[in-house]
Image (cartoon, rainbow, N blue to C red):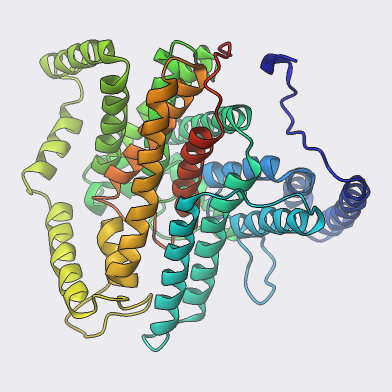
Length: 484
C-alpha cells in the first residue's frame, strides 16, 4: 500500500487483550464525561458545560493512541497553555499537566501490557536520561533554599513535559508519524497566531476584554496587555492566549522555520498552500511579539535551511529586507533590533546584569548548582535569560554538560543522516525540523523559557522538537515520497 493511502489516524498492532482494554477505557471515559457534563451543566451553566465536550474528546484521543494524545498536548500548548481545570483537588490541575500525565500513563500501560513493546535503544537516550537524573539530584540538594509548594508542583510539571520526549521517541515509527505531527503543529500554531493577530488588531481594549475571561480558568489577572518594556506609551506586544510574548515567539519561531521550509521544499511533507499560509500568519504574529530572540532564532533557522539546500532563498530574502528598509516599512522593528545590538535599552542591560550574577553563582556552585529555590545570598538572585546559564546555575556544570551532549548529539545525528537522504521527502522534513531545532538553540542564548520550570509548555515543545529530529534521523528509509 502506498504511503498516501495510509489512514491519517495512527494505527498500531495491539495484542488481543488491548482492544478489550481500550473499549473498556473508552466506555469508562465516556461515562465519566457524561456524568461530569450533566453536573457542570446543572451547577455552572451552559458555557462551562460546553468546555467539557472538548475535554471528553481529548481524553478519548489520549486513551486511543499516545500519538493522538500528543496532538492534544500540542493543542493545549498552542491555544490554552495556562488553562486549569477550575476544580481544586489539593491543587488546581493545569490542563497541560493532566493531558501530559494521561499520555505518559497510557504509554507506560502499553509498555507493561505488551511484552514486545520496548523503548528503542539509542546512545543519546542515555544522555537525556542523565540530564534528567542530574536535574532531579540538583533539585533534591536544593530543598533547603526556600522551596514552596508551587516549586514542587512546577518541577513535577517540568518532568512531565520532558517525559513526552521519551513518549514520542518510543511511539513514532518514522516519516508518516512525524509528517502528521508537523501538520498538526503548523495548523495549531497558525490558529494561535491568527487569534493573536485579531486581538492585536482590536487593540488593548479587545485584548483585555477577551483574556480577562480566562482568569477563572487559571490565567493571570495582571499584566494582561503587554507593552515593550511594560511602558504603555510604547507599542503593544502580541501574546495571543500565551500571556508572555517572548515564550509565544519561541513557539512561533519554530512554526515559521517549519512553514518556510515546507513552502520551498521540492517534496513538502505538508501541503504547500498550508505551509505558505502558516508562514504568513505565524511570521506576521512573530514580528508583532517584538521578541528579538524570536526574530533572530527564526532567521537563523531559515538561513541554515537555505545554506544547506535552498540557497536561492537567500536572494529574495535579501531583496525583501532591502526593500523594507528603503521604503521605510518596519522601521520600528529594525529600531528595536538595533537597540538590542547596541545595548541601548533597559531590557538588554538587565540581561547583562543577569549574566554577571549567573556566572558568579556558577563559580561558587559549579558541580550541581543551587537548585530551584532562592539564591544562596541576598546579593545574588537566580534566573537568567539564557537556557545554558540557567541550567548551569540551577543544576551545575555537570547538568549543562549532559544537556549539551544530548542536544548537540541529536543535532549531529540529524545532520549526518540528512546528508545521506537530502534528495528525499524525508530529507526535506528532517531539514525543516533541524532548522527548527537550530532556531530553538539560538533563542536559548537570549531567553530561558525552553528549560524554565515555570514554562512547562515550552519545555514540552523544545523536547518534542528534538524527538522529531531523532525519530526522522533514525527511522527513515530515504525513499522518495509524494508531496502532500
